Length: 145
Image 1 (cartoon, rainbow, N blue to C red):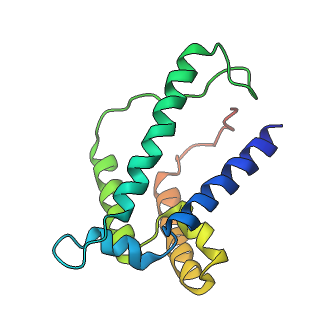
Image 2 (cartoon, helix red, strand yellow; image 1 turned 60 degrees about the vertical axis):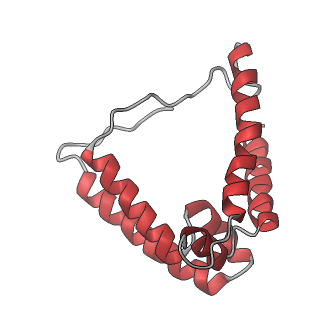
């Protein structure tokens, strides 16, 4: 059941990105071009996404457990660290240069495979570098969710 819900959620997310035009890197770059040909479309997409998310948080507060799991897996609030700031800056630079971020990049394979492949390859290299730098020196223990 969780797999079906995950698949349906991913398909809905991808469809929303496609319908809103957010799979087009030029549209995203136009949003970031405040002093040129600024396109506010992305602001409306983000604002529109806040409405169902706010409703979801209100519903979640009233639920004892999620529909497809034993308990909720909510993130903790972590302090702002240099690593977080650096990662955010790298994300922003990649987003501005490529006009894509991880979710839309994967969905963009359906629309523009060459551009999506270049961005996704660069993203994978970045993931590999972070993984290599973060590896603990001792034996790894499996994480159980």
